[in-house]
Length: 62
Image 1: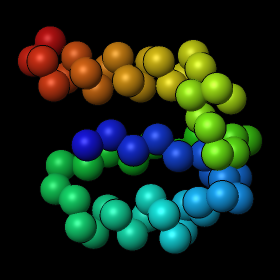
Image 2 (image 1 turned 120 degrees about the vertical axis):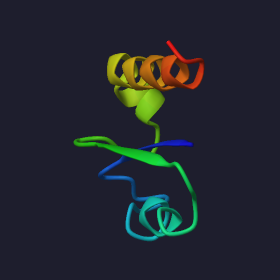
Image 3 (image 1 turned 180 degrees about the vertical axis):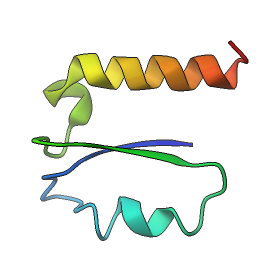
Image 4 (image 1 turned 180 degrees about the horizontal axis):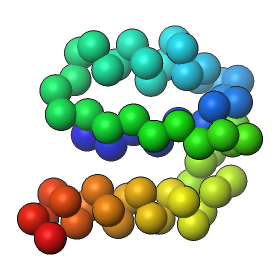
């Protein structure tokens, strides 16, 4: 599973949203984007696309 989270997310803060999931999910990757709020895909589209492309390529065995 790929988790992409904004470091400055006030809606779902990192410490209460993404970090606790790390203890419960097997094979999880968490990427935290600095200077980013609640919508990483819109706030940092290039970084988000790169992370997603790399993750999906890994899943397909590329």
